[in-house]
Length: 560
Image (tube, rainbow, N blue to C red; front, side, top):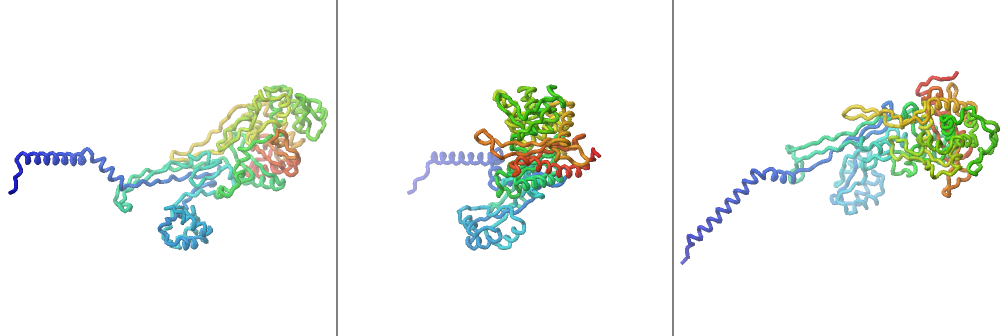
């Protein structure tokens, strides 16, 4: 006989069932009301994917609008090894198309990676040839490729972009954030098989493309500068060199050439030393080009005038040391103007001794030596002017003619610009304007300070013209134009604090037309084969370059 369920037990079971039903109803109600948003977000997140939408990198142009750097999309080849049936066969077919050994491709496919690039940024004909092989497990991913239409021209000004899309060196490095822009995003819904839903929800944040840059560089002047530098280095079998051409009226860089150089599109095969911009990131002892600065300080303080004389014995004694003229030449009674014309070391010591240690140091600093110029390029060197506390008495004499001080070619160019323009030291710049969605933003020239008065600058211009017309820099003369300038021959310091035997740096610094300077040019040649005669090659390079630059700018002659 079956025993019946007691009424009390039935009541308990019913109560438990009622409570469970109530709790379930409350839970369903919660997810339908208060928790509905969180539930939907959790479910949607499982079906959503977020894609990065890359911003377009900005275009770089020269001052006239010629394209120097731009970006195109190329296809990069990837592989999913598990989907490739025969690795050896695939490698054999790809090798001649990719110009890569089959063994290298096979090793990549056998590496155990689930996904890998086989070759990035393929030229389109190569990508089509790979496509025609129809190998299952291969695919293409679009990637931006930075192109430089003028090949290696202005390489050190431009820099390059690495495989990760990051600018390195030059303008590409200094303005990377401006050029790169801000990536956007695209969120799409997918089905359980990871297929995009045609009618699914899409949320897009548009990328902000990078700004375009317009440089102060003139492509014609840059081409002429690089050609002149190449000829000078080949003629002298020199190890390196640099040329700067700038506008002294505002500090705009018109050309900046450095050798050895590199191709921005083939950086992987470049010598690391070739990546260094020797006009900006390298310093050297300037030699006699520094005499113009020493004499400018002497005239500005009034301790000498162009006609002040001293008796040149072929040497000067200072700090117990004997400092000789080049080749021991003795000039006798010599004016301060003739110190520049003859490039007399003893004369520079004479002026510096009258000036004094502290004023000489202050003028060096005022002309910008020992500090970066502030140019808008990456990796600028500051040169070296030792603190006064570290000077020996003889340093007043050696620094006066450019030994015991290190400068960059750019610093020297800016100092000569201050002499050329009437006494104002500008901050040099290479980006004339940026252009973005908000319009064009032009760079305003920045005057840093006035190291000398306009009267001193005018006097120095006259003296430097005389140095070219009648003095040691006569090789820089141009038919129809007045030229102001000074040569320099510097010894190269050795690791033991002495100087290398028979190794020199030759240079020329000047401006044209001297009556109304439009261009400052500095040319530096390292270790010329002709040694002390390397300044002849530097002046010849100036001569050829200046003719091209003046003709390009249509500057009228200022002499009959």
